[in-house]
Image 1 (cartoon, one colour):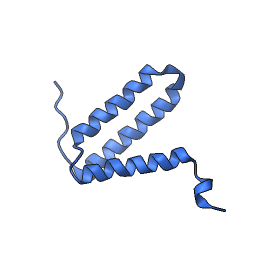
Image 2 (cartoon, rainbow, N blue to C red):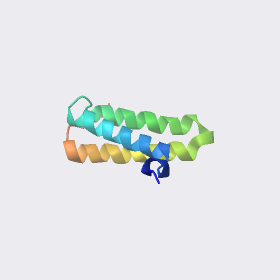
Image 3 (cartoon, rainbow, N blue to C red):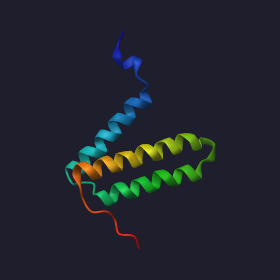
Image 4 (cartoon, rainbow, N blue to C red):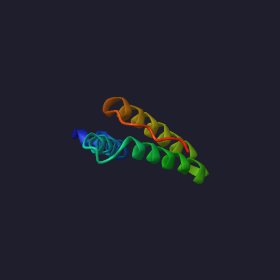
Length: 82
């Protein structure tokens, strides 16, 4: 059995995207502020599309977790609240 057939394509895409965000942060292409802004955009989708609310909520949680991980691993300053 091929391992790529036993893994959901959505799971594969999520792993690739998480790895890409971490790579871009590691190379200082993305700042911690950029990741915080991305988190806010993902959370905003939760409110925009009520029919997919549970999926958007899960995506928002995953993005927050990724932001926390990147913050601990790579550091950087948080965005100042205005």
